[in-house]
Image 1 (cartoon, rainbow over the protein chains, first blue to last red):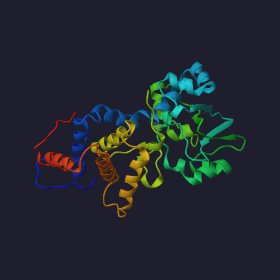
Image 2 (image 1 turned 180 degrees about the horizontal axis):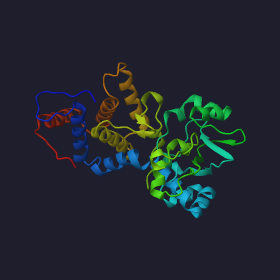
Image 3 (image 1 turned 60 degrees about the vertical axis):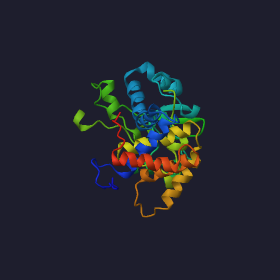
Image 4 (image 1 turned 90 degrees about the vertical axis):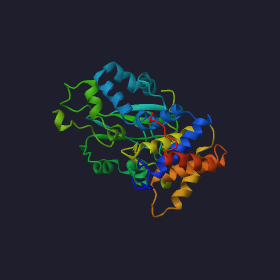
Length: 206
Length: 111
């Protein structure tokens, strides 16, 4: 952060920092907004909607076959079981990646994305290049993400829309049999849940 | 979770896009997330429509092509302008309150 402004005051605070305080204090004083509301919004956007939600869904599916079954059959309600709501009422459908089938997600029209489970979409997801190429040449796109697939693996590309958002249940990597659900949450990545990468076992965990 | 992120906010036009890393929001200092929270909370309570805020922000960003000010500095000024425009606060009381904090005349404990 630049913009630190020293005009001889005791503690060094930047001008925008002070002005933010002043604005908040006025709005709260006038009863226009409460500190709790601001906290809640900031917290929600920073954490609650992050990829961690999706990682919890994946880890549970990996460790609980009954949950996995419900998740693949009825994604929205299975995800809601963990307390994550649909994006503006949109359904969330989940597809499983297996050694035979690799699923990936795109939104060719705009940038529909399963926010409640994956947080904010990455810039590349919204790029013209990804949106068009994911459908035309998914294998090349996957390769650019470092995902090499054998020729006999079927690639399925799911185009999101305003009614249905997609999330991918990545393949549970070999070598993770001894890991707990909590440990598994840590290794699930956002990109794997979009389906552009696989989940790797971190070397430290092997 | 009773609330979910507003797609208008998660998905703003390229030129005003929120700074992020790996899809998640990035705040360089706590005040930035306060400024973010205020703007979103005021929108949620119907004080303005999100596109109006985006317009202000786009104007601020356009007027600073050399990026001399940080993203959230511009965010903050957009928010303050809009709050004044909507009559939520006045420019002079904001200046006065800012001055009170700057001089140490007013000093809140961090919550």
